[in-house]
Length: 193
Image (cartoon, rainbow, N blue to C red):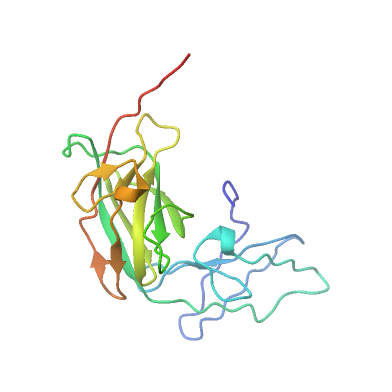
């Protein structure tokens, strides 16, 4: 899904929720719905129910003789996780574009390692980030690929750690923001031979 460009966008009717994406050429499409505010979680369409990332999304293939109708979303309300990304000193905000990943805790597992449920690019110009998420327990990892920072997991102490075993869970509840999930990012080093 990375690098794909939106083919079309439409606003849903505020009363009925109905939408139409018209003028699309035949092809394969993934659909995403998002709220302009924080009332609902961004979701992708899937035949099995809505998905929270592009890789879980279903692919639709409308044609001129078989337009698709009744492609519905059920947007969920959720909570949010927010914090600030800092350099190792804990004072200087990191403003480079980084991937911030949220790993949904799997019941019975004690490790954070796995596949993220949601990834977004952040932070804002002041180093802050905020992501709306469905209710659940999450591990947070900052993946600074392509920068001179090392990746880091949120540890619950305002710092960060490169080991997923040191990561702490953050609980997200509907209508509640889990704030202060600040992560310190060490500078990356290199080894060559």
